[in-house]
Image (cartoon, rainbow, N blue to C red; front, side, top):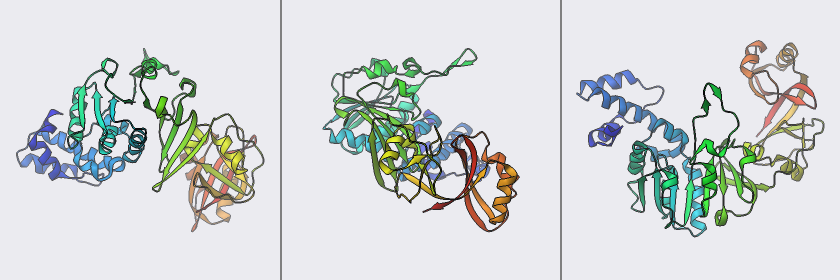
Length: 388
């Protein structure tokens, strides 16, 4: 890894450029080895070029001037999402930020780009070295190698934390129930920091571990549920739950308490797939109530209405036919409609699209969507048409 921070490695990395799934990697390696570059250096450069190519999905053109680790890239905040974190800190009037557990420095990049003074703290020296490289263009950012729980926070206005999940394998048996001690730094310590703070967690974080009186915000980006952020103290806009959706350059927010469940009624002419941030935040009931929509079955995150409702929070489908979840019945119905191109979705049933598709023997020029789900207490297959 240290070889990447040499002038030779960085020059070679720029020379290699992007390496995607279609690239002839063997030919690239052969060319570099014939040019006299050491095998280990070539391996690290090829690996890094691949990571940079993948990183474009999160960092856009910035990826071409950054360095990554496999884990660091996977855990890194997407650039547009990190910009939201930075914006809240900036608008809150905070100027000096400690980023604890900074990884490769994705959030610190966003903080520094808005003019905040940021100290990025990372326990692993090699990852910290890459964060230093990524933050080098910003004089208002520095990286320190330290354990988060030992770092002195006295001179900072606010704290940003991205706790890591510990290895949960316990002597051959999987540890299922999460506790604050399953995170590093320990969540009890993180929650107790006497500073305004934001804590980034996985979107599936257990609801029962969320402290009272925080703002819990689930964030989706272009349809992907990417994070849960807990905002404390003066960084909290108000206590409760928030679904935040970033879609096609727009920002949508739905707020609530998560106490209302969707009323279940019969399936109607239109069925809707809500954004995942609404579902995970348990705000779907409040959203459905406000929109005059009902659920199709207890615990199933599909909504329905008799008249068409247009909302950026919803993927909308018109129900063409409702069938029992029976392979032969579905196959005949699709054949009658000449459906050869089929999107298959499922919720609440044990059959998988991969298992069902080859059995349907699709033929024809038509296209449709098949939803496998429960309607009331019955397993149903719904042939539906997307409404754009």
